[in-house]
Image (cartoon, rainbow, N blue to C red):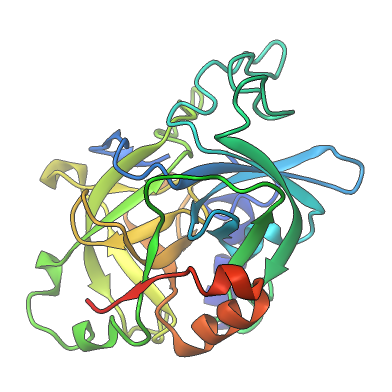
Length: 293
C-alpha cells in the first residue's frame, strides 16, 4: 500500500494532475459543443507567472468547480470558455492571439473569459490520506459568465447503488476537457480545444477508490476515450454526451501514457456537498442545482 501511495503521488504530480506541467481527452473523442460551461483554467503564482492549466465546470455564473490539486500552491486563475480556447496558440510567442490564452482575455471575449482571484480547496492533501484525497476545489470568478446552462451535480450518494450492480461495464460516463490528446516519444499532442469522450465504469469499491473515487476505463478499440494532462478538474458526467450531470472531477492515473484506468474524485459525497454549499457565497450556493440519478 505504501508503494501504491508513492506511485499515485508521483503520477499525480507528473501526469493527470499536472501540477508542474499542466497541459485532452484521448482515444475516440469528439469536439464538445454540448457543454459550454466546461472551461479551460490557467493558474498563476503570486507574481502572475503561468504555473499550469486544468479543466473545470461552471456550476453558477461565478462558481467554477475543478480539482483540488489544480488550486493547490497557486494564487489566481483565468478561465476561458471558448470551445477552441487555445487552438491558435503559437509556441514561438507562447500566446494565442485570438483568445489571449494563457496571458489575458483578448478584447471582445469578456463574455467567455474572466479572472478568478479567490481559490478554495476542499482540503487536497497531496495524496497523504489516499484514497480520500479531497481532490476538489473551486475558483470564484471575478466576473459572472452568463450561459444558457450550467453543470448540475448528482445528489449525495447517487453512485453508491452502482457499487454492487451487475453489468457495471455497461454504465456510460462522459469526460470533457482541454488536455493532451496523445502522448508519444516524439512529442505530445494538444489541441487546446474542448473535447469529450464516452467511457465505462470499472470500479467504485477497490483499494484505489474506497467510495471516494470513481474508476473508469478507456478503450479506443471499443469506441471509448480517456483522460490526460490538463483534463484534471474536468467533469465526468453520468450518461452519454448529452448529459450535464456531474458525478466527479478528473483526479489521477497510473501510467505515463494516459491509457487504461482513470480515476475521478466523486462529487456526490455528502461531506463535499456540504463543504461546497458552505464555502461559496450564499447567493451562488442557492443557484447550484442537484438531481437524482
